[in-house]
Length: 625
Image (cartoon, rainbow, N blue to C red):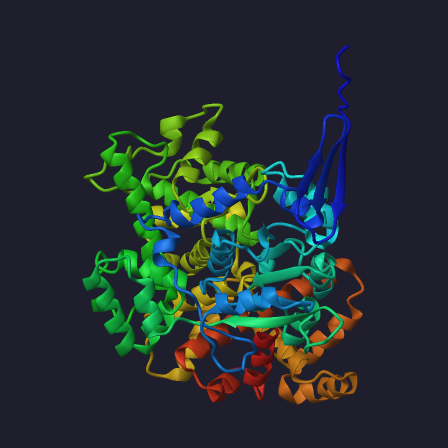
C-alpha cells in the first residue's frame, strides 16, 4: 500500500529571524522572517532596468552622450542663507539613515538639475550592494493630487510595470521605499494658494511613521516663502512629528563646470571654462546644468566665443532649438527620405504647440486630444504658408496643403512628424500624453511667439504669416506669460537683448507704449488704470486705501473715476470690462518693470513716468509673482 503524501504546507512568519526549512514525508514547515517576505513581495527588476537604461544608454537630446557621462553632483544649502555644502547625494544618503520623520524638499531654479539629481540618487541606490530603500520616482506633471487617494497616486506609477498597489503600500508603511515626488511645480489645477496647499496635503498622506519622502520642484511655484513653508511642511527639527527640511541646489562653480564637460572635446571645454572665468554674465548661464549642456553642443558651430555681448539664456535656447531642427533635417537628408514637414513647418508647429500650452495654462504636458486640436487649428490657419528651405535640402518646399491636401489622416501625419522632431516626446508618466523634452523648450517657444508678434514689422512676410496663424489658433498673448515665470524672463531677454538708448526717460516711455500695444489698450484708459493698480499696491489696510482714494485726486484725477466705477459697476458686462482692463494693465506694468530692471533703468525714471512711489508698487507686484 502506497504511503499517503500530505500536500499541506505550513509557513511560520517570525520577526527578525532568518529563513529556515523543516520538512519530512508528512509535514512541510517553512519558517520566514518578515524581512524576507518584504524582500520578495515585488520584483522591481523591470523598473530597475528602466532606471539604468535612462542613465547608461539613453542619449541626451541631440547628443551622443548619456546622463552618466555628463552628470555632476551639485552643491547645496539647507537654507537660503546657510553655508554652502558639497555632495548632495552624501547628504541624502545620511538622511535615509536618519530614523526621524524628517522629509526633504529639494528646491532649485530651472535647469539646475533637480530631476537629474533625483534620478542619479535613485540609480546609485539601486546599484548599491545593500540599498537602504527602493526609490520610487513619481512624476507630478499634469496630476492633480488633491483629487486622488494615496492608492490612486501610487497606481499612476505602478500601471507601467503591473505592480500591485496594495503590495507597494505595504512596503511604504514598512519603511522599505523612498518616495520621490518629482516636479511639484508642474501639478495641474494649481491656480490658487488653497489648491496648492491641498495638493501638498495629499502628498503628506504618504508620510507614514517609517516613510521617507523627497519632493522636488521650483520654489517660484508658490506665492512666497510663507506659502512654500506651509505647503511643504518646512519647519524646525522636531522629535516626534513629521516635518520637511528645505534643500536648495546651487549653481555650478568653475570646477563643477569643468567636470560636467568631461565628455566633450577638450579644446571646446577649455574655451568654455576660460570664457566663464572672464565673463560673469556667461558664467551665470553656464552654471545651470541644462544650459551648460546646450552650450557645449552649439559652442563651435555658432561661434559663441565671439558673441560675448549677445549671450543670455534666451539666445542660447534659440540657437540650441535651431540646432535641434537642423540636426533633424540632416538626418532626413542622410537617409534620402522625405518627412511630412519641412524644417520651417516643423518649427511652426512646435511653436504653435508651445503657445497653445501657455495660453491654456497647461503644465509641460499635452494630451493626444489637445495635440490633435491645436495641430488641426494650425493646419487650418497656416497650412498654405510656404516656409523657406535651404537650396541644399531635399525637403519639399510646397505648402503643406498642396502636399497632403485633404487626406483623412493628415492630422495624424503632422502629429507623428512633430513627435519625431525631438523636442516633443512621449510622456511616460501618463498614458496618451506628450511633453517637451525639457520644460524650458515650451517656456522659451511661447515667449518667442509673443515677442515676434510684438516686433512683427521686422519679420519677412512668411514669418509674419506664421506668427499671425499661431496667435489666431492659440489665442496666446502677453498675459499668458504671466503664469510662467521663466517664459516671462525669456521674453524680457528677447526684448531687451540689443536695445540701446541715450535718453532713459524717452526710451522707457516708448518701451511702455510698445508693450501696451500688445494688449490693445487705449492710451488714456491705460494711464488711468496704471494709477489705479499702483495705488492698489501701495497700502494694504482698508483705512489706508480709503485715504488713498481721496488723495488720488491729486495723484491722478482720472483714477478716482475708476475707483467709483468699480464700486458702482453692478452690471456684469461693466464688471467684466473693468476686470479685463485691470488684468491687462497689471500684466503690462509687470513686464515693463522687469524690462526696466534688466536694462538698468532707474526707479526715479519710472516714478517720473507713472507717478510717485510707482517703482515701489511695481516691485511689490513682481515680488508677489
